[in-house]
Amino acid sequence: MKHLSAAWLCLCLAACGGDAGPSGGVSAATPIVVAPPLSSSAPNFLGNGTSVRSDDTAFIATFRDDDGTTYDARQLKGTAGWLVESSAALDGLLVYGQSNAGLSVATDTNKALHVALFPHTVVGSSLGFYGEGPATLSDAPAAFADLYDEPGLIGHFPATLDGYAAERVARDAGRAPTGLYVHTQFQGAQPIDSFVKGTANYQSLLADVRRTTATAKLYKRDFIVRGVVWIQGESRTGDYAATLERLADDLAADIMAITGQAVRPELMIQQINTTDAEPGITGVELDQLALARRRFGRGITLIGPMYQARFGAGDIIHVADIGKMALADVAGLVFDRVRRGSAFTPLWPLSAIRSGVTIDVRFAVPGNGLAFDTDFMPPTPNQGFNYWDDSRSARVVSVAIIGADTVRLTLDQVPTGANPRVQYALGNDAVIDGYASGRGNLYSEDPARSVYQRLGYPVPAKVRHYAIRFEQPLN
Image (cartoon, rainbow, N blue to C red):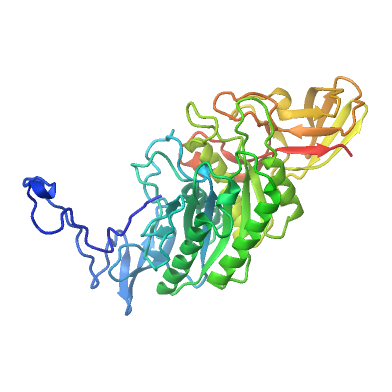
């Protein structure tokens, strides 16, 4: 994300004290670049804005985006950024977690997205759009600025791509832009205990909420955090589900106290991949699923899995940009529903019923029926399905879709073991071609078009809701 420090809010001098001689560390022939002071008598960086007018504290202008969307936006006098005008609250999308919530792998895309895709409507803070690690961020008001990832970064932040996708979904539906604020707080290789209430990461996230709430007031806007995308859990942590539930509730209470919002911010979980180079189950993915099921409709939503996202070259844990785009297509859709107060049910199992050597697994289907991926991900044995009991008395020999919501597994013999269950995407194959071992090929295609395929990136043309990773007891 664009990380501006305060370059346009203060003068930045290459040398302090006036002498540019050798003792100052700057050659006498080296020019000293001074950022120009910002005007308070005329708009700064007006761009294609027209119909400029002003009040005591701000300039207002009319803008027209490339897609034909027209809106008014406000610029605080003496600052550079603009924020779309609206009587609605400015909505917040926060991304929180460990390395896959931030930047940890080199890009596999070109530079086309290293400009503001939605200027003045998808924004962050001019003091920085992300926090990395435990350093506490300032909670002092700061101007808003267009959200984009600088070309010098190694890749794209998931939050940037999620924000773009959410804005595109809203515009596709014909909704006028009201503004979306995006922020990331992440720290790599940390257990969930490094993100709970009282930690530096938690305090930094809340500092940004306080800063943004105060900043929004300067633009005559309220601020509401609609969703917090949670990306964490690559390794097993004791009591994970209970800890995550407390974190969700603490965040909701503290954010609501800061912003004054009546609506609870939704914790939006992207179900974590396994880190194992060989098949294995960490248990975190099942804890996330169990919590999302139990708290469905009460502040916690499971967006979907992450296994459809390709890793970076030579990496078995960090998602590269094309993978982030596939994930963002889904996250943008789900956030748009959350933003409008609607629930989202991922592609998860409702029942698994055995009759002889067949097991029929019925799913909640968020899109148009079921399909097996043959063109985006590598194949997985039995499409990702596995039968398991305590004595491993049978194995899956074939998998078929037999209805709009049902998959049939055929076993090699009638099972006899105790605790029979169906597993999916829990480590039935080794890491291959940059994808996790815990993966599968079942998905449901959404009617919505992919935001990033339209921009020319090699992701599916329609948004795909891949089945979540699960273990389902037989009914």
